[in-house]
Length: 595
Image (cartoon, rainbow, N blue to C red; front, side):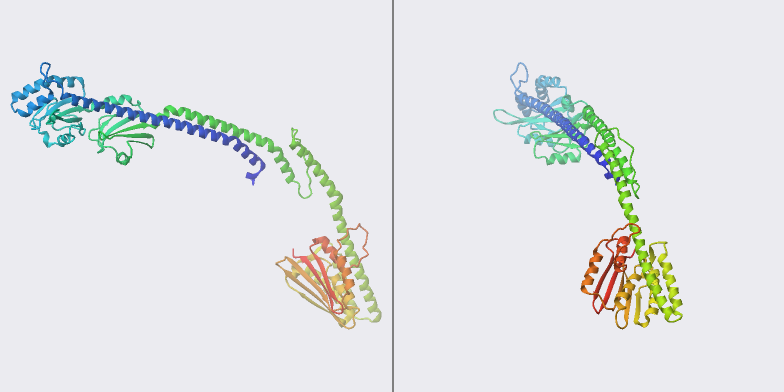
């Protein structure tokens, strides 16, 4: 039970009182700082996405403005015909020279666009009948746009800007990955369909968006609703698609913006529903935490240092308080078998522990004096009393026996004298044996048999003796000289003065459940009157008296003495009880411990 000693309990209390506040403060500080970093990370990601979306919207607005104003611009500095007018002419003519003239008239406008925006690869005009005029990257010969999907989707947009799929355009010579913007042009007055304006832009159009991202910490991806990547800030990725989990998350979005954590990355998704594009920004939490992590590590290091210091202080303090108490407890454990040990150790302190040592020494001295003056004296007195009782029993019986031998010897000279003498010798030797107070029940019963051998010679057939003893009872150790006096009492007080014969029964049995052995001495003699029986019961209730050496009790040596010896030796829970009925007989029950 070392874990539950005072030192351990005190140590645990000190540790809990000191370490738990540190853990709580550390946890709250760490969590607050982590939440602050996460908020800043989320803010950085949101700002990155918003800046990217704003940049894309600016690009689209610029393309929108170009496509809307283009058809209103004059075809030359001296003429007032617009791009729309030239498209009408292109639709009406099939002459190559006329087409060349139209192209020259529009050359100044489109070349200015090509020079103003370095990401523009080419500018194209398509008439409703399939004729085209191109500036910049050349179209394939005899290219018919009406066969392509982008052409029909542009017309279906009814004058709204159409954004094509990113990638290589097979209808442009030496095409590189690009994105196409196109718009159907209509006459402002008649709403007549004049043709299609198309702008082919390289993916460098999105390079300016990376300038708003956090260096080395974030990157973003621009994708369409089909999951195809339009632009990746980390480098070109022609024909690449978004991972399936991002496509699933994008399709499951209920709003236009969402964010989630994926391992060491924070991902923010924002839709551009007007253009059917999606911006996905990723913030590397690992690299971000490396910048902010020094503060979190400092919090942990300070907390661990404080915890270790408090634990060490708890160990020293608990040891300082409990060491003298533990030392005293060790000394107290040695105080066994009446070996009362005092301590000469005096703690160098003026508190309750020093007082405890002083009081302990005083208590040991008082107990030792008490044992010497009281307990040990009572033990000696008890032993003397028991020996005195045995001496009384032996001398009384010896006197009666010798008187019987003398009477028989005067009357007749027979062999019965030898028998009585032999039995008497055996009984005398048994009585004075001092090896131990305890003998086996077999020896005590043999002593009773010797006694009855003498009595049956004396009384002849007048007294009959019946013994019923179990084999297991004979092995039990009992106090000697406790059965014979009771048998003697039954003869002299129950049968001797009765007319006619009588019987003495001696029974013995073992009670395993109660862990005791029970002897019963019963006779069918004259019995005991009620008054005398009450006196005997009162006598048995009196506690055993401790008398000095040489003193003798004037009480009867029979029932009371046997009961006193048993009570003195085994304790007050054991002894004898007596029942009697006049003219019927008397029964004495003796209860002894089996061990």
